[in-house]
Image (cartoon, rainbow, N blue to C red; front, side):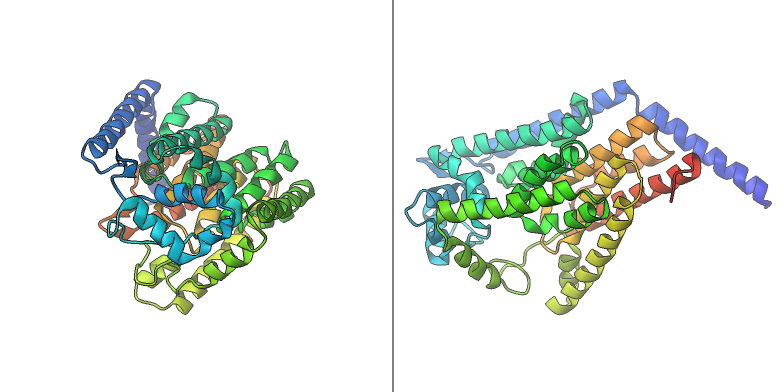
Length: 409
């Protein structure tokens, strides 16, 4: 078969795919699909609630053991004369047993966050468990939705973002993935126009420092000295404020608790966490912690080099922001299902770039796949695979841009 004929067949195939995309991604179809998806999710949550599988309350006790219990309990410890007692495993485990009922929790975990996190959770202590749960989820959903809207200014984007499966998982257990995603997104939204404020959001992100590993690389590569200095100053101020508010010895207590982690990074050595990372995948394959850390370090170094290359060149900002966001998810060894709500931030930046400069054939289908794909399938940890799919989508978009616009390499 001649190369010319092969080229014509390939062009025809791509033309069919583009035509299919144009018919599928109409405003009417997107609206109908969005309404169906939101209704299905609402019905699923209602079924969980009515079946007693979502937090219900009896005599001020939650009806199920969920992660939010640790958040709510931390607010009670923050109000004590010595908040550092939260890092005493015996005391915190007893508080969990008292809250949920003895034997109702598979994992009685120590408090794993730095003292700065207490600034986020301490207001919850003014409310009952269920009231705090509702307010926590409502506040974080509003914050998360506002950040998504700041990236793509259309309300339909918010509806798509909040129905992403990791977001549902976050709301169900009342965890902090939406807070992490919102802080990452806020920093990226502000980075170009208000670098000092972007540094402030990065400082708040230090409550989960593993998701900020690549941000200094991006700031150095882009020579954004104001954001870098702001992040450093606010981070130090944030840490000092926590020491003054919750006791200077809360930091040594936290570090001691952190260093006591086992090789599987679980707060309980007997419980294997379903880590959605290269580290977690390698360990689940039967390799030891040393091999897993080596694999994770190698991937992180490659990602750091890729971020440097992306952020040191005049590439459209939305592509750089999406790449940094998605690479940050893959660079950490410690990431769980709810942390992948940050996928919505990366996809929002990618969508923003597509709406402004057009979509290449197949891009919208690939984005739809990344949005619909579940993070767990028959026990498989495919979160990193979805991250890889988004990274490949970004790289493909960059290559298409170079071919069609003659942008500098």
